[in-house]
Length: 365
Image (cartoon, rainbow, N blue to C red; front, side, top):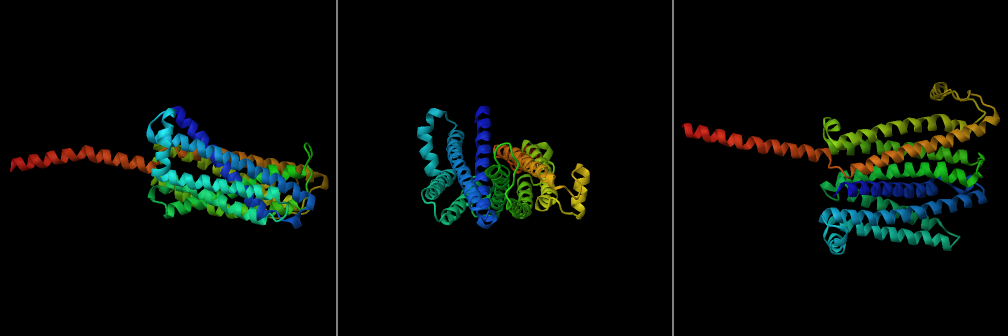
């Protein structure tokens, strides 16, 4: 594949990751976090409509990127031009592992579209379409793991399972950040205003706990996947895969620091803007950031909400940049492949010399 095709493929994969994480996270946020008792009927309906609009946009974007990925991978497999796709595409779809996984993926996207259309037609009883949509989304995430580096060892293997769990945890976290920072906030706040529904503080606390669980899953799973692909520390600084992985890990560390500030500083303030917060980590963050005093005035609550939503959006933006590194990693051969190739080359160089030495010794006898 040429360089322009490679760059285009990275862009397609990046958009696909954004669509998938937004889809999974929005559905998880709607199903597991937002409950009707926390909001008024009008607030809940406004958020529900906005959330399903995000789901619809994610489905459309994921369908487009899936088609784009199929076209680009077919061109890479066949070493052909765009004009040869009519011949190569049926072969890839019918005779390759990627084709089988892609067919399952596009079928799930179709079913997801039908599940989305159902609540649009029926205002009552949206629980079943929501549950079906979430199950379909996590199965689509599985097709991503089955068509990536984790599937090099086979479909039903521990690397695929761990990669899938990692992708699900990351998606619930990232998509939840987007839903919280953009969808939920704008559902209740008119443009230019920073109001907050009474139940939003409880929703933020619930999401914070879920995000902490996601971090507890995706962090060890991600480190396991990274070590599986590099196998030692030297490839981290000697291969393109390693350098890209280091860039991604640096962004992850940065975003986890911001997440810590959100969880241990902003969430307590949102729950009790005028209360006293005696936890050491809260006081430490407030002192380092030059934040508001421990006991705040009621009028400062609006400022805190504005800073919190801005921090959530920053967190989501940095994670999206980390997804760009993930998309780039899919186009590089894993460092373990490079090390194995170098080992074979060294073995091929030394083998004839050893044979010659044996022949010389044999001749001497």
